[in-house]
Image (cartoon, rainbow, N blue to C red; front, side, top):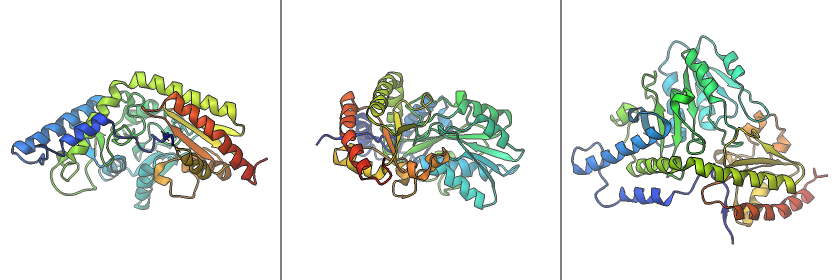
Length: 386
């Protein structure tokens, strides 16, 4: 059976060169603890330092501003709790209704601890308004956390404008860039961020590794883990050397060819979107029509359950998604789609297609070919279908 992977926003396959680099640090003499002063430890320390430089270079930071973590969720939590428990001159935090749950739930947890929380609405495209951010700011605001690009609908947020607001008012600004790294330019100075989240497994790196950028001078301190002095006292625990090496290599590979690859992905994405609208009625593109990730196409198919679409596609060898992989076990419709004003019954018919480096025009053609009878069959079974 033909296999087509269209779920790169959930996770990506590990690049062969990344796996090769990681393997070197699982074998031979590369197994040392980087805290050790002997030869084996210093080999590991050198690998960590080189990877830190690669991640820093990719986002316009300095190596000292990069802290390695276990992934995007830990980085988001470290960023948010680290600011909340450091800055005592206020207790107000601003975020948006379409954030990843790693951000939303961290902010809501602080709300239960007495922090004042503002969760901003979004428009029909899933985009937060700069004006809404500005109106929400008070003299007690200590943190704004807005994602760079949405994982479910692909919309790119106005981060530069929000960053200027935060800087002008002396407010710490955190951006979850898990979906944007390697797909669109990410430069911490141009974006105006103090804290920025990176994850390895979204960019052809391994799972279980990420990074948090912490701008020099940012009022932030580690509050989640207590232990040794690793990562400049920011994140205790023996470093995950193979993961760190894999993240460094993945960032290096995905950023060096980003422009050319984006052109290819945009052409594939647009071919897929055009093909869907040419073949199907009662379908809507979700997310912003132009300010969206180059590899991201997400739809609402009326009169169809997204789960049924996914199962039918899987039987034909195609892997897609109905939204965030972190909420795939939930029967509730996407919080992102609901925040965009989409009714419950329609939100259940979502389909997210996210392309990657190995996808081809033939994959898109195959998807469109097998999707047509699937939609016809499922709509014929639906009591809501006309």
